[in-house]
Length: 390
Image 1 (cartoon, helix red, strand yellow):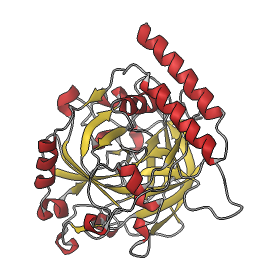
Image 2 (cartoon, one colour):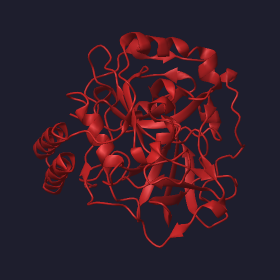
Image 3 (cartoon, one colour):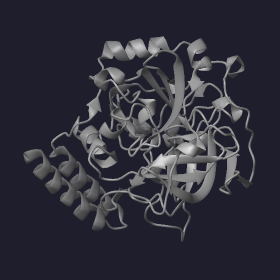
């Protein structure tokens, strides 16, 4: 009862903070400071968190990723049969919408951070061949536009630089890739299935995580990052790996580099809950069916349908490797006279696709405040170490 009461007080504080935030910088900074204070007061709920990673373990993870392993890590994206997914009339997200803004980077990565990780000519991806189709439509009538984030170097421009490729060793063997994005100053967001197999409690975590923001053709222009702690929602932990899932989210608390937080180097995206339907989003990541997941891709489309439980599907031709990539509303750099709120706000992450390559749909769990879901997990990750989210 105490935990539930504490959570109620924290959530009320969060709602007040979010609803009163203004458009000026000072108001946003005050909002984030108050959110961090509210989060720090929260009692941790029942989530699965990996044990804190020591410096030696972080070094071991870096050593694990040889050029050969990086080049040959395989895409991960759960796929379902059309018959296994039930459409719903409306989305089923729980709670009241809340949001926080993103931030531009405040420090430069430094030339010494850039590195060539592997030779892209050595990449051997086992994936369907499904090329870029402009203004395409799947067999169910979901339209989308798919394109490469074009010129070399554009990955390093904010907000593109917040998105990267996540490498990890699978819990039951093999090396894999997902996509991920920087959500708060030390917190990277991805899909739950990209950090945990969906069963086995703390023993179900994947391992040897390596996050490479803005990767292009084997190069790491902003360097590489390893996590100190990894978490997933209790909804995903109990899923047995089945999608759609009500909260297929995972988060990583990243180690600082030379005392500098990852968010200061990459900048951060914002987020907004309960905003996946209706909406129009830019979906970013590294799908291995396009450019062998060596270049960042973006797919833009509007919400197509709600599916059970607590998911929304959008038109997309991105497949394995795009898992965990952010779905962002109002994405990009706004010029004079543009939008002033809810810029670059994550409203979902890629969770699953379909066995059939003709359907061209992807689903995302709805970020919401349900027990064992997105906001409680974020609260827990923020409270794990001072400064994680501010």
